[in-house]
Length: 286
Ligand code: ADP
Ligand code: MG
Image (cartoon, rainbow, N blue to C red; front, top):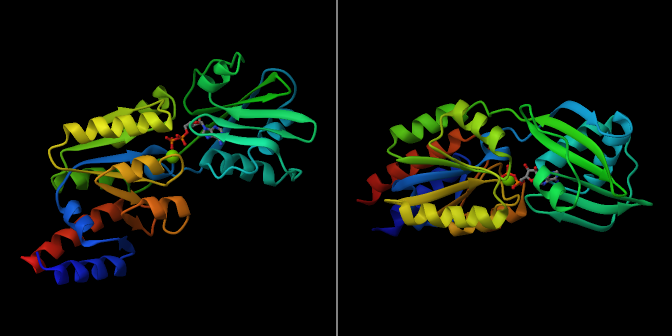
């Protein structure tokens, strides 16, 4: 192939807000067999609305304040949503001691005199808590303070406006299989997966299990495999795919570094555009 064709392809892509880090990635985009998506912030908005506060002991206010305090330093979409909710009430900004984000699980740290945790049911059980049942739709954020389980905040995400169209267009462009990988719980993942019409759903995955899943998909693929994510808890998967695609522009340094292709918008539709540009490039080359 003539490199010049790819150079002009990269230029054409960049004019459309698609940054391609090399001609080989355009070539891979032409031969996509499987496209794997992260869920939160990629297929969904990643802007959660708080649906319900369910304190197990204490008040709504105590539950919310503990969650907002321990989530204040996290960049995770769940944390951002709880920060937004609590911003109006003025959370006291304090530096956490022994603050830690446990990828795919939650956050923990000591704030002032309080030891706080917020995260999912699996992790809370590991920590020795008995989380409330999760019987309804949504993502459940469990909260604990000083070793006492405070209750749960149920939050809900929305599917992005271009997700369903993008998945249909990928099929029309010859992509054989679409997959969603998520650390969120099975029920929520299944419901969203069915609404958007994705072929395969893998849920309740820890970050290294996402890598294992991607490797299994790579073995089964009949062509190139792309992974599309936001770089939060998924950078290892971005690097492992044949084409790692980061969405949302220059938001996350981790994503930009790990990715082969950066889409400047948040819309899955832009991936379809990237494939169109890649295919037009081939016409120049051959
Ligand atoms: P996804 O695969 O949906 O992008 P992640 O792998 O980032 O999700 O996280 C998986 C799960 O871990 C989330 O659904 C949530 O239950 C929990 N989690 C991760 N980070 C946080 C956080 N900062 N606060 C609360 N829960 C979190
Ligand atoms: Mg994620």
